[in-house]
Image (cartoon, rainbow, N blue to C red; front, top):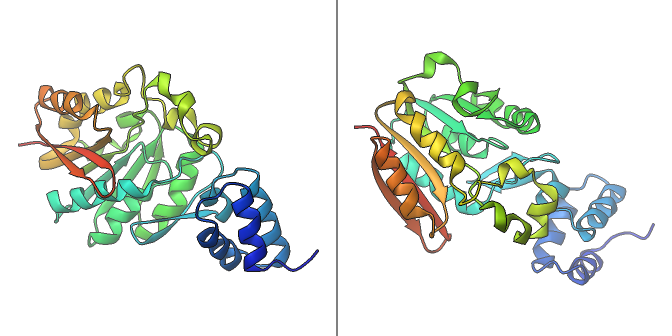
Length: 258
């Protein structure tokens, strides 16, 4: 097998349609431990596997988050949710990452909070397995189950930050997602029902029972969904507002228990 060089990898990636071929080539060649592994990684990327799954990790909020096949890959725009959570409750001592996927949000929050009690939950066993790996360095716990049913009962009424990165793609729009998401990520992490807000409604309805006084629920939505999500939070008794980052193309709805 000929030795891979940066130019040869860039050429192969560019031919496969990778827009950031130079950056991806550097990541692959610095991550691979052997030339054979590098060649396999290039082949997998050329075949359409998301870069993060090729590498086995994704960068998120300054952390290297382990990602595994069949698990939702954390999006960089979700760093805005982490930023808003820390700004809303900077002294949080109990954090829950609901619909946690890889556990990226929980890990990022824990990394910025001194000794916070961290719990995460997801209905997908593959996600729970991955999250346990990412939360272990922070002393966090990942639980399997459907939303709040997965959480230990002793957290009820004690949660300062409840980050719920719920699926919010409307069912009818799932087929139009980029192939990297549509073909390689679990449907349960993408499909939010007819208007994309089915899971958000369930989370908002129960959140007040789990939040501590002054605790904050944060959910990412699309710009189109934000007004409905805001109204949903308010019907649940939360003091709600939206936060927008034009730079990161991110919309977050925040609800505080007052």
